[in-house]
Length: 481
Image (cartoon, rainbow, N blue to C red):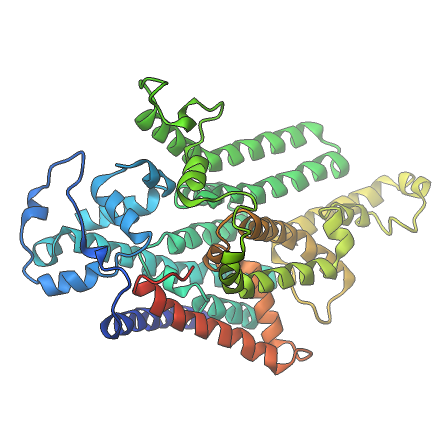
């Protein structure tokens, strides 16, 4: 309970610090782009009475609306007017929907005071910052399950509270909402609430496109459960049920993203002359999201590998380095387990697979097999509550730890490769910021007696510097990440 209060206090304090820095930088530095206040009428609807009404406190409205910069412009515009332009379909609907609902309900009385757009912006700030506090709480609970060490979990969570992408978690961006749904889904999955985890993963895919990658956690769990059913329990029908259930859950995670692509196709392509329609409409698989990323933002494999982008690679190098170090660190703990995706642990439950002759294993008595099966079932139940420590633990615990950590590392590795080779690399700072293994590794490094204090200061200094410079550049419409 004490640690929970500390997590909540740290999350709230970090948000207040970031918001305070943002206000300070805006008040003393002129923004690079002053177009944030420009807000033409919606294309498809007429301006309603709330928007026509003059705000009682226009200066307050101006301060709030000045925070609508970069992608925040798209989120607020979508919440106000819907999806008007092709490029707006790059932003998934859950976050704008939350903004719209909050502005029409709880914050609706503020519209006459500061105006409709300012209330939309204020709604976005509230959704992001409240989501962040709960995301930090879920990260702590997930870390306790995985690390089984409340102190290490607290350190990891505090590092998340002051992560280098903090400015995006307190701005009108979908990072906080995605982190809440993704980390919350992982917590429920590790707690055994598979259906609830599936729902949260699906919602994460409705907040950000990379939310669909969370289906990989369900796939990994399904793979191991099916293997256990066939190899240990000799129940192929049970394996079939496990596989079918896993496939349905993965499909459910993908449904929101696929449905949104279908929504875009219906609005922009359906019923239109093929000769006048957009190129992606006539593709074999008309995927709007990929087209927008490539056409409007130049996203593609190795397309960002240009000499002029070297500063952006340097900007992303700290988070990429930490992510790579965390991957290497965990893989080196049990490389064989990682290479076999954890299936060798199943074999080891029967004894030493390398030293026990195959004939002797086949001649095991029914009572021995029952003992193995009971032990395996017990291990399966305890698999979500394993020790994730690198000091003074047995080989068995490291093996079980590796099985649990494998999907986290695979997920992080895929995101690192995507960020480096495909995306605008500077986005890596916020793209990777919701990955728990980064904070688990940083927590280990900062507390390990074998680690020099310099690394501890380096990590803390990196987070503090990026919070400071990020709030300065981002809030004044200068390029950051």
